[in-house]
Amino acid sequence: MKHVSIVVRAMWDDEARVWVATSNDIDGLAVEADTMETLQQKVLDAIADLIELNGLESDDREIPVHIMAEHLAKVPNPCF
Image 1 (cartoon, rainbow, N blue to C red):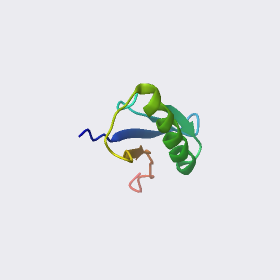
Image 2 (cartoon, rainbow, N blue to C red):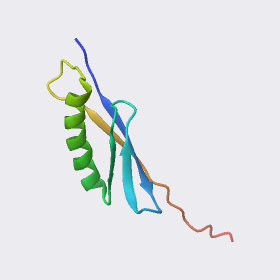
Image 3 (cartoon, one colour):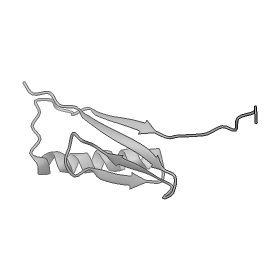
């Protein structure tokens, strides 16, 4: 039995004002969107295509995709 899961890293690009998603687990994934909701759908659609293109094999009916988001925010320091 071969079980597969895919970890996707999503980071906010402050300059471009978009979320950017990539993954080391599936070749060719590079997606961007202006909202996390839109990004998630684009990521899932792209992965569905890339699974077949990359010949990824799994015994699972559905392959788990973990979207890990990172967004740096700052708060003013009240001590200054």
